Length: 76
Figure 1 (cartoon, rainbow, N blue to C red):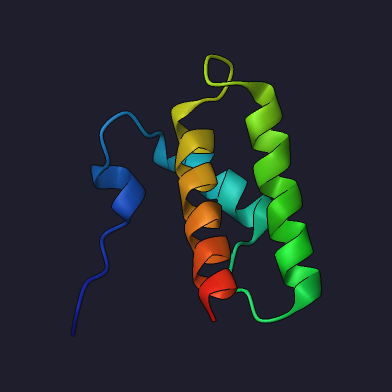
Figure 2: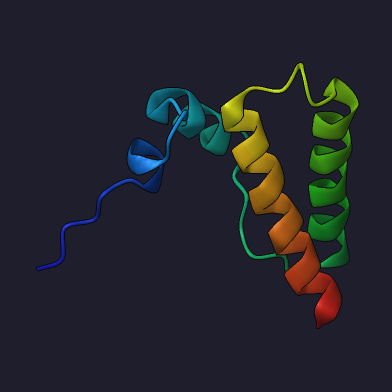
């Protein structure tokens, strides 16, 4: 059996519990519809508006994750 180790627990500078709470609140997933695409864009916009200095490491990680999901969807 494979034991799954949380990525956030090994990422430098990330608080796994805080990152987990953000993930639970935002529930990012593979984008399949225009509505999901719009919601993902809104998340990115909100995080970008905070500014580089105001975002936490956990918010930066979410920003990168959601941006990757958007990029993948837009390439389809």
